[in-house]
Length: 304
Image (tube, rainbow, N blue to C red; front, side, top):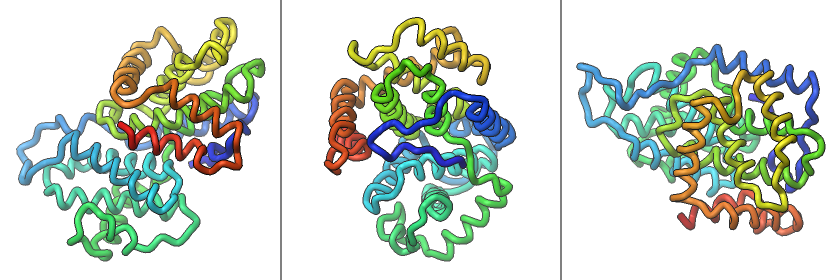
């Protein structure tokens, strides 16, 4: 997975260039060759043996992962990668039709632990996670064995191109007349919206690049009058997106459907105007840790 700069309280993104397009093309190639997710919860099979998981279980699993990352002050992008592992595993092997919920909890813990190993430079012990685990009866040995099963099932493809990475590079494709402060707001809005979408099963079957474009479009539509992007600038952006991704920002049916789903999700979870104000506040006061974008996202999540 490529590293993107989304932690600073300012926009430090790249400029639109052939090098940027080359990076995006590499991500698209990796996305195309990765094991894709499908609507695994609605798969019917005669092999059903235990109580199976459902959308609510998946949502609570994602929320538990965010709880772990926030408790230990880890990068929230870890949850994106861990949930990608989980969805790809369940899509590939239909484990949820053969395993109990407790065994699926083991899979979830192993997915999170593997993502932490790959993306977190600090030492994070197995016992730390088990203390806050979904099931206290799970042993470290079981988690290690499940990690190995994940690696082999995914054929070592454990650095996926994520939604927030694609969204970040899409924002980089905005013309230079868009102020850095506006790009920063779009960055943080996209990050928060991508975290919301992780918890919702309806987004599972779509490619990360498609979800990213829908999220960026919603973020652009959410800008207030003082930060709004002109029609001409949005047209230039739309052409660049189409030339690179083959997707139209307004006429593509998948994008339109995902935007509608995302707007519905926002209505039930977030006051975007309030969140934008929190982002702008953190942008103006980098020294105030309580006003950081991460804290803003956590506070908005806690209030829903």
